[in-house]
Length: 84
Image (cartoon, rainbow, N blue to C red):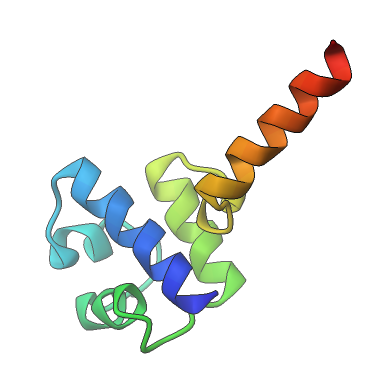
């Protein structure tokens, strides 16, 4: 799971066009850019509190870091089947 969270974090940062240093600076509290890099590479597992702070800084829900695109698609298909 830590690699998936890291990939989601990197995807968000890249989508915003920010460096790790810029990204870290915008998060409330002290977050070092090297820590962001470790999370992105899957070498460090962030706390829920840090993910919440990142979410608040960039207006993304906490669930963003745990969603799986494939699961999301499968869930949508199931939901559509129920409505038919």
